[in-house]
Structure formats: C-alpha cells, structure tokens
Image: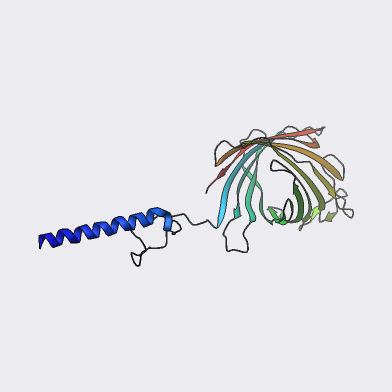
Length: 277
C-alpha cells in the first residue's frame, strides 16, 4: 500500500512539473485579473500570470503658478486631464480636461476663484497630418462662455511638429462695452504651435496667440486695441516616466498697472505634470 501511495505521489508531482513547463512557455500570459484559469484539459492554474487591464483613460495632474509683471498678480491653476485609452470604445483617443484657475493677488496671499473650464477634443490622423475639432466650456461668477475650435497640424519628423488652431470665444452673458452699453462680447482666437523635441527628456514649444474682437461689438483689450498678439515659450523636462516639470515665459502685450500707466505685461509660469496611471 505504501509503495502504491509513493508511486501515486510521484505521478502527481510529474504532472505538476509538466503543467508548470506548459505555463512557463507563456501560454497563459494574456490572463486578466478577473479571469480564473481552471486546471482542465491542459490548462494551468498553479502558475497563472496576471496582466493589468487597460484603463478607461490615462489621467494626469497639472499644477501651475503664474506671475504677471505688469498687473503684478499671481495666478494659480489646477487641472486634471487625460486621453481615453479603452480599446473597444468609440471615444478612444479623445482628450479631456477639467481645470480651475484662481487669482492670488499681488502678494500670493489670496485665493479667490477666477474661472473653471472643461475641454474635450478628438484628433483624426492621416499619416503625418491631423485635424482636431474641440470645445471649451468656460464658466465664472459672471456667466458662461462657449469656445468651439478646430486645429490642423503636421508631424514633420518624430521630433518636430507644427499646428494651427482657430477658436471662437463667445460670452453668453451681457457686459458693458466701451460705450457703456450692454452687449455680449465675442472674439476670434488663432494659436500657432511649433514644438521641437531636443531629446527624450527636453522639449521647447513656441505658442504665439492672436486675438481679434468681432466686428459688430465695441470691446477693447487692455492695450486699448481691438486686437492683441501674445507670445509664449514652454520649456519641458521629463524628469521621470511620470513627472514632468516645466517653465513658461511669455509676453502678453500692453496692460495698465495699478497706477493706470500702460506697461508691458510679461508672465512667468512654473508648474509640473504628473501621470497618475
């Protein structure tokens, strides 16, 4: 009896070695965490390997502090953003973001909510060329603003890309124009994006932006013109796979300081992006 038991134990051990060898060949490498691999008809359970499910969306946290020299004001931005990655979803590749911006005053000792934004877009790619329709919903205490846009771009090389975007900003609420009459403001906005990747970690983007008030309104910018041109440079460094600090330097045209004098409005922004998954 003891001999038979020993032989049976050896037979079971041999079968387990056989099963482990089968699993080691990678036959079970595509098992999800929610699946259970039964020991049945050559399938193996003793060496099950698990792989993570693809998340519905990648999620990134973005924090940015800004200082403007002309108006002597600090501003703070927090943003959650991501790209939908679910393979079977019609929304795959869709970008989304939720953002809140606050005015921190001249000494960064205030924290009053300024506005909130929700943005969504979807890129359509044709080899190196792409088109990207999108929409921004902007809200603040005075009311809501709707900003549809359309962008086209071209990837010249793996390290050099350009894009141009037209955006129409429309205020749904009434404000007083330069003649003290109540009206709804609207403007045309054109952005140019020129991005150069100098290495796997370091990149620079140049982003000039042109604003023009629509013809049938009497609204002016802080430079006392119905149009304004702004320039911005973004310097990004990918410190780790998840953490990317960046700095922005820009010129926002003329503005009026606290004494009513017209001065140049320069900005510096310091922030970081962190991938949460």
